[in-house]
Image (cartoon, rainbow, N blue to C red; front, side, top):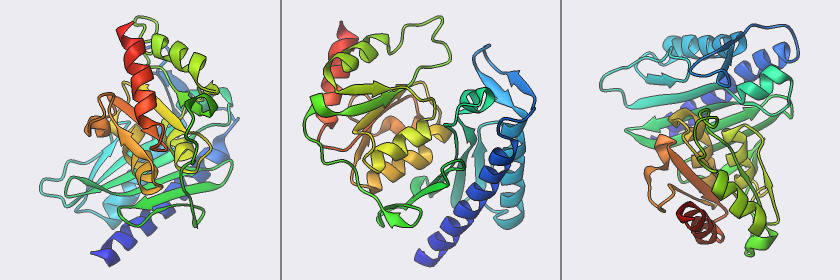
Length: 265
């Protein structure tokens, strides 16, 4: 099985770089921007081009695998051993505005469990990857989470759901963490936030109302870098994206407490 996982990882890394090259080539050029569920929920022709490229390659090279992709080009393959969970352009709003924080995110499950994660930032040329039980890496070099143990010295990140105009989800939590941690960032790419936890640039990250493709790769990368990833209750339901909390591990319980206290008011 190790050889098979190596082959899957090699393909995921190659495809992430290919999709990243599409993004880099179209960055700050004229491209079509549309909306989906809400005016703030954007999709560009570059999202579609990247997804089409990735899915076509998987259909050609891994026709027996299932694919779950954000823009709907996935394939439901009954009985598939592997499922690819793809965000072809994570950080679409950033990309649309020329804000340099976006990535390709490719997670791969084997028999329903995380097996491979790859996140590629084409502007910084940083490729993060992990395979279950074998550690996490950036551009081939091992990475580890921060060793910080004090919450008031922690740098954390979060994000807000697309329905933020109708709901106050995360506002109380945002304020509580801002008042108790060293500093708080909101940069618009869940996969990169997770990778920044994995490599120690951040001590933690949380968000509501994401989707599986937002967290499939980054969540595994955090775990393999020695961090901890859970839902808001400290449980294993983070893979749905509905609630995710990721930290360096030592500050996980502290972040869960701050979030819980804020939610209770």
